[in-house]
Amino acid sequence: MNDDTWRSVRSRRRFLAAVGAAGIGGLAGCNQGDDGGSGGGTAEETRADTGDGSSGDGTAGGSGEQIGSGRSPFGDRDISGGVSMTELPDLSGELTLYSGRGEALVGELVTYIEELYPDFTVRPRYNSAADLVNQIFTEGSSSPADVFFTVNAGALGALADEGRTGTLPDEVLDMVPDGFHDPDGRWIGTSGRARTIPFNTDALSDSDVPTDVMAFPDTEAFRDDVGWAPTYSSFQAFVTAMRVLEGEEATREWLQGMLDLGVTEYSDEFLVSQAVADGEISAGFANHYYIQRVLTGRPDAPISTAFTDGDAGAIFNVAGACTLDTASDDDLAANFVRHLLSAEAQDYFARTTFEYPLVPGVDPIGRLPSIDELNPPEELDLTQLSDLEGTISLLRDVGVL
Image (cartoon, rainbow, N blue to C red; front, side, top):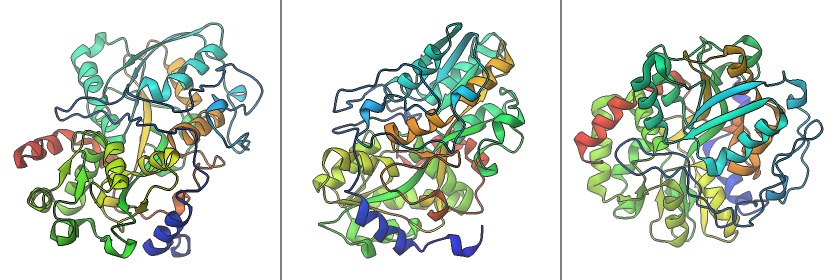
């Protein structure tokens, strides 16, 4: 990627500030989250309020049909750039899905895929990503799991590191750019999530927010006025990235510095973003879609999005899936994962969760900058985010958990 494809941090901030309150809908009043904590906090996966009460008809139809399109005020979108489910191999048989993505967020998609095929049955088990990874390890070769679907690359990497994943075929891996799947084919991203800094526009301008995440503990303006959700796996992936990029000791000092600054703890990142919009705190740490969800129900809320520059605070992580070494039918498991990368599924992620589609040709919702306009750390490989155990140990040792 050449330098011309990257916009400056300031340009991206101005872009989001200008459009953040426009064109967003479909999850009014929603506090959905599927980042279940792995550090002793309670999982948030199953809690949701879709606001408008609509859920779509969940029935199969022609090429490129939207799933649950009644939830979205955007009307029909052109998703012809992706591969429709109608062009994928039929699914037949039974499949056990371990899902670290909450039923409130992805249950409709799973049901849609199941009902598309009369001879296909999905048996989903929903829980936090950490609990399901531990369950797979505990069950060993007796695990009934065929596919693992989860919220970040760290959980997928943890399974891959222990040799518990299968290998996805090239026709699945080729559906997304190389950076969004394991180079050895052990897992693949299904949607993307950017780390951001939500800030209150009544209290701050974008120039008040540091572009270096490591500068936050020394920013006196944030004393007793910044929030985080340390039991959330996306936050833990962010800390893992910091450990990789900055080193263990620098990360320990950053965490201690934030505690000394008087950071406020919340149970999830939607609540962090909501607290920013309410003026309880002036800034926080959250994935990009939580700001969009706040603005869905409150278009005039004084909240905007800032990015740090090429560091752990700007990582672009993925939700994703893998087949497991215990899969009873490797082809069925791989083809189910392939359906999560279909045009219909990618559009579903964009409209229902405000995440980034990873398949080229399906655009994000909310007038977000494109993936190429984001500025994640180039030297970070998502496979390096698998050491969640080390991160949990550090968070506990510092007293964050």
